[in-house]
Image (cartoon, rainbow, N blue to C red; front, side, top):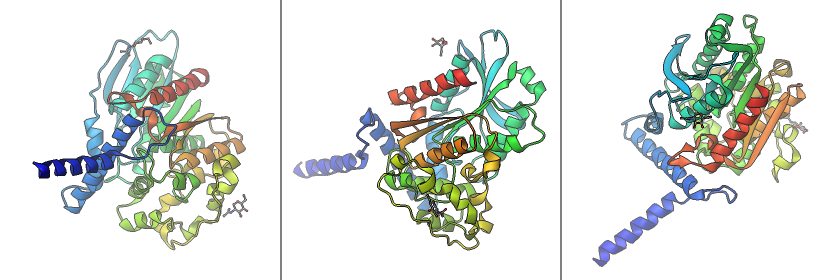
Length: 403
Ligand SMILES: *[C@@H]1O[C@H](CO)[C@@H](O)[C@H](O)[C@H]1NC(C)=O
Ligand SMILES: *[C@@H]1O[C@H](CO)[C@@H](O)[C@H](O)[C@H]1NC(C)=O
């Protein structure tokens, strides 16, 4: 009996230790955040173990989270929801039911998940798209682009680009009763990366006549050159997205070779070919003083001979929009950029907001000091946070004014 009790105590302590992770003090509902973090961490560990045992790959394991969260396309009183294809790419389409009373807005939405995970049909994304569609009277096209592995850059980019370009044709806009002057791209995390990249590429594409009205970048990932920015240092082990996981996502976007991941982990992957692009990730220049904290800048060590040739995506603005020249940024549509304090990707978004402004692009930058990566999709039980609703409402308010 005593023995069993001892084991029980030990097990409880272990479980408590496992679930417990320090949640930043200013983040509300720490219990919920801790549970989500623990669930994700446990799934990560199980996936690592399964990969070691040769049962499944690490990313396949993590994909279980996506699968568990999937909901079917269900229409409600306000919005008709269908899974279909546009330009041969699967999309979930949200059409407002109320009589348009004129032409509608449209939002092309790209979900997050590190180019490896996620789905337009996950509960959080489904709710988000529904609310955008209903409250803005907008057609929402939420794109299920191909994922890594097996698909690598530029497959993800090409899918979202081809859907966007297809949708922007005048006869397609007319078919959906969409005003050509009120279309935007939006995305969170890896989807914010894709939205920024699509906005850049469209403005260079002579075949596209319709211009985007806006771009919405929710805690976007924008560069993989310097993975030792202050935000990476400050938030190595914060909820949802640890530095290790972000490194894994970036490396999986380009390759399955562990060599890149290992080099990224120690930030020794910066290709010798990076040269002049380093100025665009120079945080001593692009981060406001208040966001540099106590960190001291030193130029990242350029080493990785040949890495630029092996993984050209590292230097390609379609994968790393922050590396775009000023000429490529000029004339981009007005941007809404959301960054979160407790997020490894914080500085990517802050620097991009700075670069867009310097290039004359109107920018609304919201920085949520009490938020962590992914917070905007925590919209339904058991992963519901007041923070998620607040971030979404703020973004919807901006869209109401600017789209
Ligand atoms: C339909 O729209 C109304 C008005 O915006 C809202 O109050 C209601 O909750 C919506 N219904 C659903 C199922 O979302
Ligand atoms: C980064 O910017 C600082 C000025 O803020 C400059 O002194 C330094 O040379 C720059 N380094 C690189 C690698 O661009």
